[in-house]
Length: 126
Image 1 (cartoon, rainbow, N blue to C red):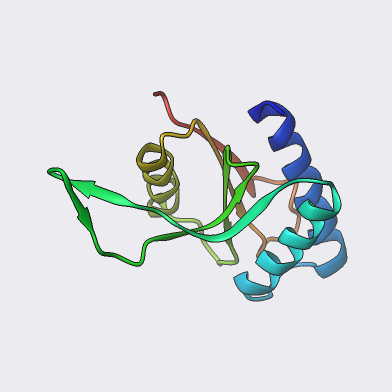
Image 2 (tube, one colour):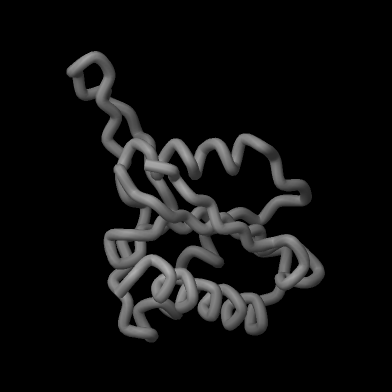
């Protein structure tokens, strides 16, 4: 599958999870529901994937983890916050850069309408 096909499936899963659960729950609840929904669609999902960090040829020992990696190609970062911050975009872009991936999805489930400015596609210009 291409990144575009994967992100299409991810967006569908986001809509389904939001339709069934609504806003205001913990991120961990949305994470578990998203894993279920994506796997139901036949996609491979890694949850809480460790992000390795190389610095000056040295592997840093950190606990840096992204929320979901779908089909080994698309990062999904889940939020359930009152206000989206620039840090969330930067964090997702950094994960993409560190893993050498091209596309990520950042979503905030704590909104009145998931269609209104709550799902963001982030591209890493490799």
